[in-house]
Length: 323
Ligand SMILES: [Zn+2]
View 1 (cartoon, rainbow, N blue to C red):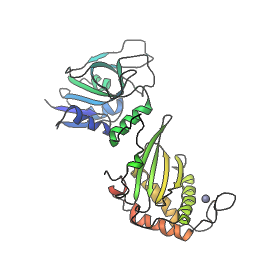
View 2 (cartoon, rainbow, N blue to C red):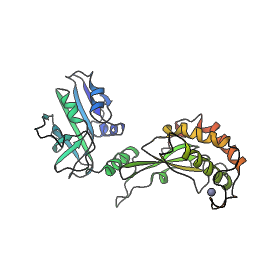
View 3 (cartoon, protein in one colour):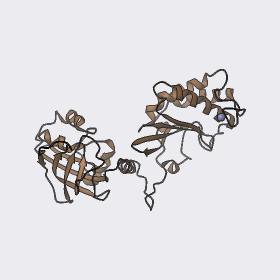
């Protein structure tokens, strides 16, 4: 009989090696929630053994503790009837607990000593004969600590004593960093993720940086373009030059990757490269150093970045060097 490993999100893949070292079984990354489970498992024969591995919330279990699920239940908070309970196989390797599956991320519950996820009961209700589930507690019903856990797992960043994480951009080896568009960090503000991009126009310390005039002009033009771009303007939080003058930071609302803003950056730098006329905001009323401008220089640098980096971006221009 076949065995399949079911995870909801790509970042849970590293848990497979932790619990099933050497496992070569097929892995299905379903996506979060009922619809994705049904869509991705509908053609899998029901006698296939399923091992569901992933992150789950809990009111009171310690974060990072490992739990094997003994029972799975749907949890619709407003129904008055008893929801069905599904039994799972357990190995006794880890403490057991019930897992409640919800349609949304659970932010509060009176249930204790149990887990909350968004998939398991939907796997069970499809009728698979043999299901096992190992969950790692990612959060105590906090979206913030869930994202933190996932991000730590993804990046392998060490958690410093006292719980403060190293700021990811400080861990980048600038000696290997190329020109490109990189995710510098992701922050959770309330329930929103905000992504900071590193728009790196110059190789650090290996070529002359931008001049302050060029960097400032690019700031005015990029900010103007981004705040007027019809699809993105409501998502743009900030654009500003780096103090080292090798690029700029772009802060965008949402959990984003570099490729998702590549087209936007292409359009932004095309706008700068072809800009003619008065520089927006370059007046004593609007700017703190309004004559610090160099439009021809900004156009030249934008054109160079566009041609040499953006339109031909490779993985090394979109993902930070790993060492
Ligand atoms: Zn200014």
